[in-house]
Length: 87
Image 1 (cartoon, one colour):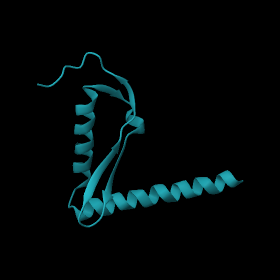
Image 2: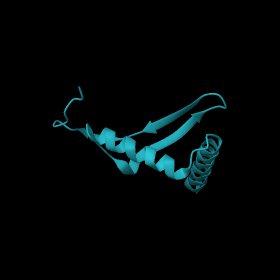
Image 3: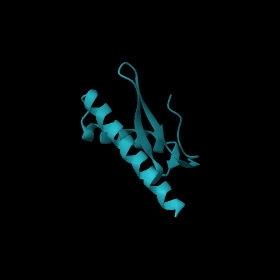
Image 4: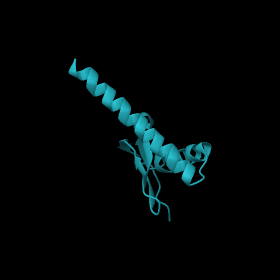
């Protein structure tokens, strides 16, 4: 019974975080498809060096009116041994 209440709180938190993301994108005049393109570019760049779990990938904007940061949580499965260093 108590687990049901916890799930509801988690759902509330997810909805709040999504709304914050939408508001931050709106304030920055960043279209949703642009955010998706940014995520795809980051995935491609990082995937050259490590194998990532795309299902667990999280991107979010944090900050206030003056300072903003794009925070990424990228679960790494393994390091690619064949990745070449960029000179």
